[in-house]
Figure (cartoon, rainbow, N blue to C red):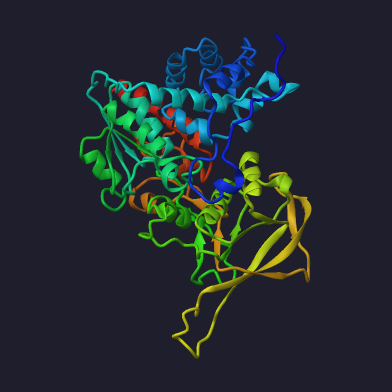
Length: 471
């Protein structure tokens, strides 16, 4: 049978319709399409796709199960290495990881590995209702700081080995960036809740509204009988450009903007939660990563009349996933490429303090850029073009130029070494400078992908198991 050269298309909502709602954009493969896509897999002996996966899922094995229509068998294969298959199938950048190594991709499009993973996870969630059975306890206790992807992964791997695991989450909902950062239309909250419930079935305790470094310290966790601690607290401290006008009302970090939409459920549009977006207003989102795309597309759905995306490099250098950029363009986001903000403009009327617009954003001044010589990362450095400034009328500005780890844990934990960016320093096993304290994910690397954070959680779980097994 001849190999089909291209991936089977992922069905999606119509662009004009989806730009007005928060329902999931990608609709998922049917059983027939999933089997047909699985048939494209060459089942290579050397399995290059597995090497491209940060958690080393046995990809050809689970795809073979799909070919045999043994979807639960496929799910069990994935679950051996991933605690969050329904999440990864939706938000992982497979095109730069497993799919980039696919042998079929040398001459054709690679197998749609991520789309098949999502299909399998969704099939399991719809058809299998039995809860996981906790293993026999091994008598050891481990504390996890943060219920994001690295923490959830570390907790799942340890729970399967019989550890008594407790997760301490600062916010009121478990999931970390999966629930406060990624919008409903890309990753429904019910999907994340289902994955968290699966960990609870394994015996994992999840304590929300506990800020480690404030409610409890890491030293106090050891005093409570925990024998090891994993820090997966993410990178929730937003960065700003330090340009004039950033303190005006109507300027948000993408972190705050998306959290208000997600955790405060502004997306439900029930009038109970004030959104950061003026209905019918104009919004500028500054940045070019996945978070910037999420913010721009969320602004549209919250009722913005016009959304500008301002990025200082070219379209070819946008760090966001190609699929997310394509969806944003289809939905009507207006890309201002090779542009950089130099000032945020506001209504300033010191003579009339009762003016309701006083201190609010009214526009953004932008300078055109051109690409110069490569920087230390090999990307051509954007260079300002003198005299090229222009203004856009906007009612809100969302800054999406990166985040760094919150210093709270570092400042309250004696002997915990961090780098100049605030990331916790660890060795190859995730061990920090403190004995029995491990860390991984964005708390170590700064903002990165969900799957890389999961990989760090797996590495640390293995090291914690080896450490405590030897006691």
